[in-house]
Length: 163
Ligand SMILES: NC(=O)c1ccc[n+]([C@@H]2O[C@H](COP(=O)([O-])OP(=O)(O)OC[C@H]3O[C@@H](n4cnc5c(N)ncnc54)[C@H](OP(=O)(O)O)[C@@H]3O)[C@@H](O)[C@H]2O)c1
Image 1 (cartoon, rainbow, N blue to C red):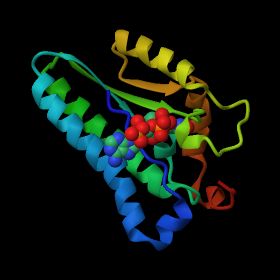
Image 2: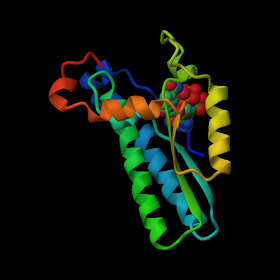
Image 3: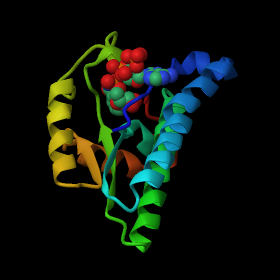
């Protein structure tokens, strides 16, 4: 399982390239590198490589596009990997996990609402999904619907939303 990640301050990243670079390195480069290496070892043997992306990777938005772009790149990388493995009928399952808001160290300072999940809830869902060898999951499940709407809002309208 690959679960490392940092949530950088978007405003600081906009002015400080170094902060953005560290975020991209941690959220994408390290994840893609480890998935790449793990895949080379597991491609023939099989198993599951479960990787934490985020709903934030489904659409770029003003308030967190540095974080979101790293997570979106992870999702694209894993999608490509799955495509390649399917061509050789590899027994390896590549799983993309997209959590919504989760109450962890990363989000300790955020105000919580009904949309927030606990780490235990996310962990239980992920373990079940690994057992079932699922390739994609939103956690909790209701983010499937929320993100379907968010992804499909036309850009001209999306621009006016305070997101
Ligand atoms: N919390 C959310 O709302 C949320 C939503 C969507 C997706 N996610 C994703 O879920 C995953 C888990 O995050 P979390 O919420 O559990 O946050 P977290 O408690 O802050 O966990 C992040 C983990 O990443 C590790 N990490 C960060 N930078 C690292 C580095 N340079 N080298 C090695 N390890 C590093 C941290 O290690 P240390 O403990 O040693 O610092 C920590 O174990 C992340 O990929 C995050 O992006 C979280």
